[in-house]
Image 1 (cartoon, rainbow, N blue to C red):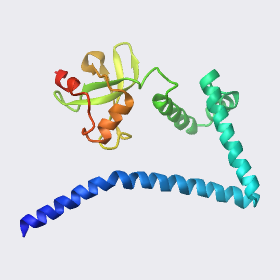
Image 2: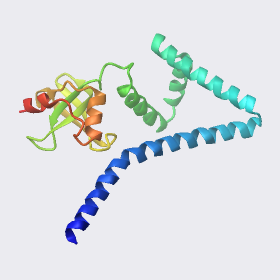
Image 3: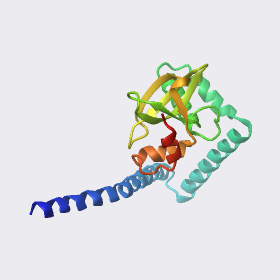
Image 4: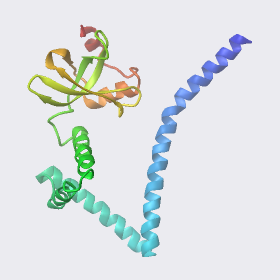
Length: 196
């Protein structure tokens, strides 16, 4: 009886682990659908016309595409620069806005300065190596974000000397996949054997 209960629980856990990614993706899709649906209802409730609602969404899409095009081709558009200037004058909001901009730029493709680099660092103690994102540096000091598994959005920010890190060939996506998969998705075994 004990053996069959263990097998039953094992199968249950394997099944749960198999469906967790599907449930997470479905939750994200449901959240986005509800957000768009609420926005659609608000616009339609105000305009009371499918034509104006479709026109609103088409114009919104075109404006966002135009902003993206301008940023890629010429840098930040004047409208966003003015908005930045206004937000920078509001206490507390300016700090949140500035940090959000830096974090988004860190992971976006148009900012190539930092966070395109992944390194290994000994953390939390010597002999334990973890991947980290380089978020800033000054001289020989590196500011690293050490994400936690399986949620890479939480973690620790540390400052270490250049001599304490080992460069990695992983890019941001590979490192994030490694962290989310709790090490299952790791194709840099050569790097693992080269760690001291």
